Picture 1 (cartoon, one colour):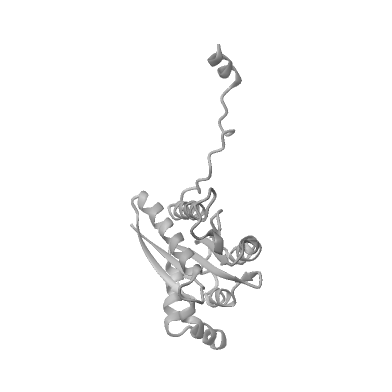
Picture 2 (cartoon, helix red, strand yellow):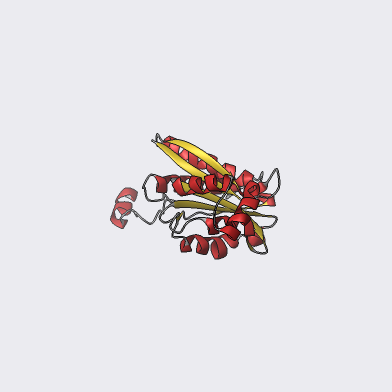
Length: 203
């Protein structure tokens, strides 16, 4: 079966760290799905190219040009990866405007992976205090791990690095697409060894 993943990126520059993060999240999700024998079709929606169409839609109520295709892509996808740059401690206006023009219920129950980029890690709370409430209102099913990338994160190989977070988020989105419970870290206290067995082993 082919799983369709819509990748929505609101970066304004070219090249864009927002697009770079979106591509990494898409690759991680594709890799996780392929491990389960699934084929993927990644459809990238660059909001920068749709800015005028989005504005026209807000004024007229009708999606025109490439926006109509983008709306169908997102509405018909099995899952969505949504990444925005951070402006004034929140998602960008272009990002919000695109999701404003979607028909009500388009994202209801749909698995969504969230990402954001900014120049400093001080903006990382945008994921929990701006983006999660937005997609909760849209009734999407958001994966547990959202990924924030500050400028210093790109190229870092430290523990807990961007690459590790991207891989974890991709696996979680793949799990939701496949109807599986998102896999988290193993808790050693979930299945403790009985004390009697520990005593027997030491005698």
